[in-house]
Image (spheres, rainbow, N blue to C red):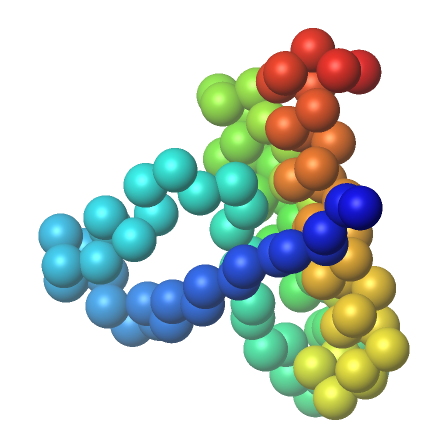
Length: 104
């Protein structure tokens, strides 16, 4: 029987950039980082532009690491969509581990 066990630890380090040495150790040996940001839709066109901007910034930052970000856009109050995002993160972690072990 295969157990489906997933442990998720959440660290909110927002606004603590100057205190990085106090929390950076929390990210040793991590498999995924979720960056959560609130985007206000004030003018009707700003939301799409903000999402595109954030996505481009992450893609640019990850080029030097030969990694690609997986961008999911959702509303935190849409629990079904949040579950889809969580499932996608879990699937990505499993796939990467299978690749690392040579199983796929």
